[in-house]
Image (tube, rainbow, N blue to C red; front, side, top):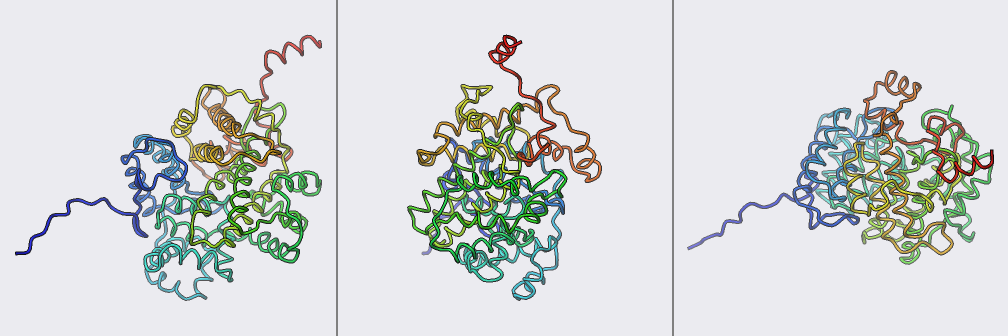
Amino acid sequence: MFTSTPLGPTRPQSSPYNIQLSADETPGDTHVEGLTQQSADRVSELLMINYARYHTLFDAVGFHNHTVHHLLTLFALGATPDEIRAMYDLNIGYQSLVQYRPASVVVQLKDRSFFKQCIGDLSYYDSFLRYFQDEIAQRGVPDVVNEYLFANDEISNDILGRMHSGFLHPMIHLGCALEFNQPLLVAEALAAGCVHDDWPNSFLFPTEEMQAAHSEAPSKSMLDIMDQLHSDPVIRNAVQLTDPINKISDGLLAKVREKLIPYLAQYRVSPTEEELAQQTTDMVHTCAYMVGAAQSPGKVEALDFVMLHTLTLSIFYTTFLAQDWISQSNKARLLHFKVWGDLVTYAGCGCATLYADRITGYTPKRPTDGWTEIAHRASVYGDDGHISKVTRALLHAQGLPDPRPEFPLRKEDFIKIAHLGLDSVERMLEPEQYKVPESIRKKVGEEMGQDEEIIRVMVRWVRWCGVEGAWDEFPDKPVSGNAAARLVDMD
């Protein structure tokens, strides 16, 4: 007689149509100890709501839905279910509902000519998303990503370039998807790439062509090229605060793109395992240094909102290296594109002077806090996720091999940047410190109709930190007791 044993309830699995995290199996590559399944389930639930209801952007000028990146970071930093829900609730009110096109459009996207026509159109986000979900369901993540990002043909090159647009958010989304092993998020990342602008293509592929034409030229480090850019007055002074809102595409590149490309082409990586690992570590450390050291003499500490995206993306390049289905040459290409974009970002921020002593000599407000306390402070800070992402990226930077001997920072300095960053944003919680300049209140609040949380983002960070006038609205740095005494003696 045939009998069977009831299987009992089974936990949902991640798939191209479902997001499901596991505290044991998908904790992320950089995380604190003690992650719970309750938090994993809360993030999974909220990300499924986000997937079903909201667009990857909530404004045509490029404001992004950070929900995926934020909640995954909170999970990895050990946030509780209630803390995760609180951050979700804080930011969900200003998201845009996704526009659903007929299912027939997904079928039409199988036609390459129609696919190309739809690229760059925000209204096709949902159609691209469903298309990539179906593709991944049929063929798997490796085949789909290799075809649509790494095939080195017209469509894949176009999408790969667009993935580096929008302050790198499509690439950040892809990194999240692969780090936490969520196929649905891979589909979201590819769909986001398809509807972003293509302005990075204007320097990425010309740089690649110039590099190929001078294959024997010696390579320079990212930091060395930053020094060269800083020494070039035409590039250093190209961006002005009066330039359009995207000062990189419509300011820097519109003015000095041709002059930039020879500098970028000096950075090259050999597609060997050892070289890729070394150069990835150096890129991560350089981004952390750039973000932390780009301060203004006489002003309180602040992190640059534009620059910090180079750091929050950097965390995922060790994840990319770990994917055995990405070829060594494509891993090198990803790293090239990352560093070239980072250098363009640095130039777009006016080639800011970097002050290593603002990091190494920084005195934290809570000096006894270690990574556990810092992670919790970042998790409960009420923003759209940028400070928690910065914090996790710095935890990742400290976990890599030591910086090269000539590098300006040592391994123990990365936690100082985390302190500096948290102290700078927590300053807004102090009485009389949250002050919105009238120009921002008028433009962002009144003219653009943005939520108060977006206005807070605009004043929480400095922007274009090396450009004249960028720090005008920031408070002066208090004079220390010893320095004040010296000033009195001088009088």
